[in-house]
Image (cartoon, rainbow, N blue to C red; front, side):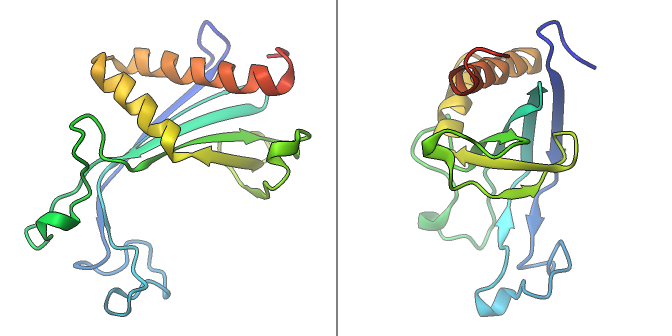
Length: 164
């Protein structure tokens, strides 16, 4: 269902994982905790995406995770109380980009766009900025969607010439 601005909205929350203590959460043979090839541990992930006109923007943030056996200097938390540093803003589109700075993108599986494939790129730095804005303003989930929709418009209007 589209909102008043014409966006499809998606929000998902995934559970924390611990491939070290519980074995691989995804049953991957390459995940070997004792050999350095493990997925490790991770907190709950909040995933928010908006899509319009076969262009999508997704943001995901991994919540901090703490364990009794984690040394204090190895925690997943920065000195900034508003952000712990793990997240990505990703830009998804169905056709290969025609602008010079994005020619490196490869096609990949995508559950956000029609056809199940997209070209995608992202920024973890931008994810941190959006998280801080959301947390500092104590926004609701509706406000969060609007923040992500504004990001979509800032990114894709520039790339596709205001077509959206």
